[in-house]
Length: 232
Length: 232
DNA sequence: ACGTGCTTGTGAAACTACGCACAAAGTGGG
DNA sequence: CCCACTTTGTGCGTAGTTTCACAAGCACGT
Image (cartoon, rainbow over all chains, first blue to last red; front, side):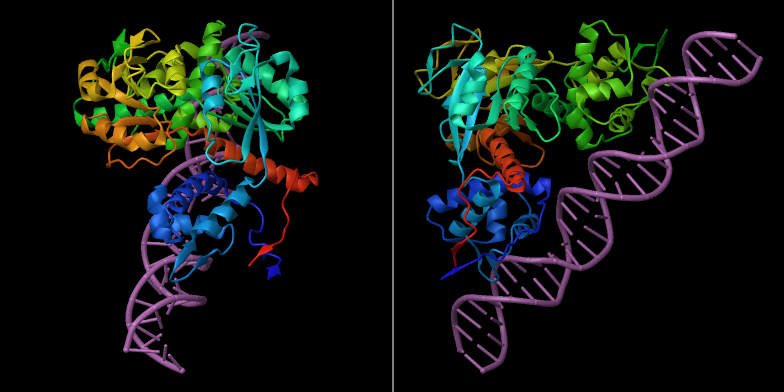
């Protein structure tokens, strides 16, 4: 029997929920691989490292996909979350900056779930252009516009040094790439409507250091160096 | 003249603020390099990509380091934020998993600000052990405990495949490393008091895809594939 | 010495997120 | 057919975060 689905989600899933859906999805896929057919919110929440009430509320934003007394059907939920995240279509990705990091990204085969296809690798260094990385020939950055248009790229990844990142972002925006993942340690300035996400190693380390210091301060076994005195 | 600083911060800086301090710090360091002496909340906020009221409130948690009518003294603020984040001490970092990503991390020289020292690189693959990466000899994972103890490592970075990540985390925790930065696509299970931060490429891509789909749905120029019909 | 103009620091309001606890709803056994 | 049991979906109180808007404070010119 075929029917129109009951248009579950109204509008606007909370941002915090969106950020967790990929985690749930991964946990569900692990269960699926193990042959599990249904899972309770309790079990899934524990696999995803969250509270079960939060998990249920998150899922409730997508619609009512569970069965009371039983739980959630794994396969069905995988499909619903994938669809919500837009993974039922294919997204073409271009990576700019094929240094150590760019190479790591290009070779990161799985890309978690499928749904993403690395369509183009670009670099400014003529020593790198022409090399084969992860089965693709690295193109010159000058051909960015061409590469984006020919491959229908809609997601741009910036793995260049900080100094070039804004320039690359401008060019992405210019050719209509409205989703950018930025690994360079700079704040990108982009027009409204362009979505930038930032991944920044040194920020993460600094946050860890903050908490580590907190812990040490309380401990009485502080590592070093702070005097409590200073010049004014 | 020397005096005790006015113990500015009470206790507990909001987590959201902590996450932004490194961004402010970077913007300030850029200003410092350019020779700027003072900066207004408006200017700094714009460099950091946030609202100026938020910036002022964030900084107010560290104490009252601005001058009304003038702004903030760049050098002094750099010092205060660095101190708050614990960057006035040196943190030793061990990286486990010297694949593409581990190599990228090891070679990411700057580590933003100094304050972090890569003390040890470890891998399980005997083809990798013994290689020299970023000026360090890669050690065997079996010597993790030794490496941590000898180098005073307090931050562990996991860049292994997903399957090994939990095991490595356990060993880190076991030898007293309470700050972990995890690049493997798994949810780590650790005891209370251990701080784990996760960096996950595919999650970021999925979040971008979600928003991209949203944008497309509204546009009327949706890319592909969704039928609106399904089996029940 | 005092007023003018600028910028900080912060109370208060609005919004967002979290988690408890429970009614509603489905399953399976007798 | 009904009852006992399980698990979802959610109303509601609480906590955390963002933003506005303005009083307080400081510098500088006169």
